[in-house]
Structures are given as C-alpha cells and as structure tokens.
Image (cartoon, rainbow, N blue to C red; front, side):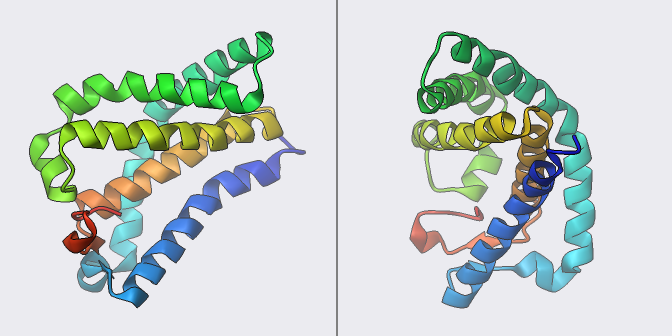
Length: 181
C-alpha cells in the first residue's frame, strides 16, 4: 500500500475532478443546469453522495474482485494483450448488467434521465463499460491491488447516482439527454 498510495488518491480524486470540470463546462456553455446545488447546496450533495458511496461500496467490491480480481488475471494467464484483456473483461462486465437494465431498472427512472430507449441505452453501455474496464484494469496493474478500482468505481457510481436521481444536474434535452450527466 505504501508504494501504491498515489493510485488510491487518483482513484478517489480523478472522478470528482472530471465530473466537476464537465459540470463547470456545461454550465458555462449553458447546456447544463445545476438546480440541486442552487436550492440545496454542496453540503446536501456531499451528504447524499456519501450515503450512495457507503451503499454501493460492498456491491462494487464484489464486482471489482470478480472482474479485475479474478477474470483479468485469468486473461493475463492466457497471455492476452492487456488492451484485449480489458476490453473482453469490459464486454463480459457489460453483459452481466443486462438483467439489471432489462428487469430491475425502473423504466420511469430511465425515462426521466435519458431519451434513449432501453436497447440503445444498453448499446451505449456496451461501448462505455469496456472503456471503464481499461481504467480499472490499469489501476489494478499499476497499484497491484483491486482496491483502487473499487474506490474509483464506487466514487463514480455515488456521484452519478446523486447527480441523476436527486436532480443536482440537468442536461438540456436538446442534446439527446435528459437529467443525465
């Protein structure tokens, strides 16, 4: 852990930095509104994001130990190129989410946050989750631990869930998005 502390720090801070820059750019361009921050403030956002972080930490731990802790090393043992390894892991990881998206995700929540239908939403996810898998896989490789990926995954989910479900950020629907960031 001593040598890898910087990867834990990167895992905790990179997502908030990117989200903050994205929200700032969107607000500056007039494509993103931040009504929840204006009405409830940063403290409320941080409290809700903290609850979401705590609630998803165990789930994301199981996911990351399954995908980056178990599957990724199995592909390494097959001498797959790291990029191919991460992409395959990401595609399998995306496929694992399909039952959630089809049967457990409340359609009203989906419709409130995007104009995409379920099929298109899944196709978009199949293009994005492998990219996340590259990041989480590289964090594992550089840190020699699954834990930075668990932290980054949990921070990303906590921030996005809080921004989406609690109305802190809204993207202009003219961009093809709903209350989604």
